[in-house]
Image 1 (cartoon, rainbow, N blue to C red):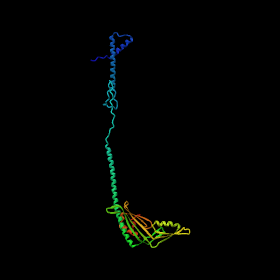
Image 2: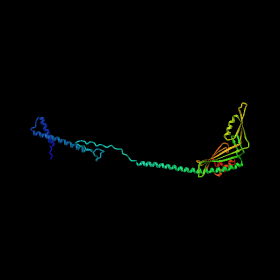
Image 3: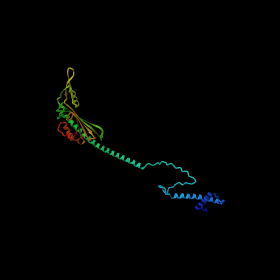
Image 4: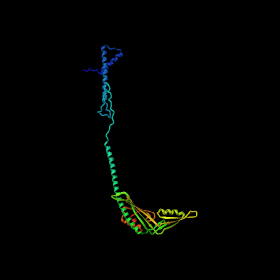
Length: 324
């Protein structure tokens, strides 16, 4: 059963009485009165402590909650008799992640792109190889017709020895005309490739000589000897030179005896990349070098007939098939 606590008014009266007694020098009348006053003071102190504690609790309860803290947040309980030692916190360990699936997707995408590019390259190479094979077949067939025609033509001309209706002029220095067919020769070269059992022609070579009756004689001063010699030599003209010297053995002039002979060469060379044949000629229609191109489609019997007429100096349409 709880004891009844004195009221605040009783405590205040007792305190005031004790103060008056002390100020007035009055002593307590008896030991019982002193004991009663002491009990009141102790009760007053205990009541004051309890009131103060209740006031603090009421103030804390009335304070609004702290922002950004959820109502369900848990806080550590602080005991009156001591503080529990903090628990040892385990250090976070690095998490080992499995390979991401996106990496596999990216790798797969890259491989797919490379595979597609490789397939395109292989397709282009296959198409190019097919085109090259078709061009090689056409050019090879054309060169075979060229060889067969020239070989037959030369065979006949080597028997007939016709007069070639063409004049050869070398920069106004010499002029050859009424040249007669002397001899012609045809052969071919093959490469390492083959089409089945047939050889692949790389080129067809054709050469011939023409000759007139009279030798050409030219006179030159000492200063012009060297230039004329170089001109004749560069164009394949056969000649001999007889120098004239004075008493001091110095060359004053020279006489050139030029053989009335033309040496011509022609090479029909395959050009697979351009799908045709390059005709390189020297001293054919005139002195010097000439170059023609004929596509594989024009390497026909008709074109070869026009070439034969050109060779003999007759009217022809060879340039309708060839371009320089």
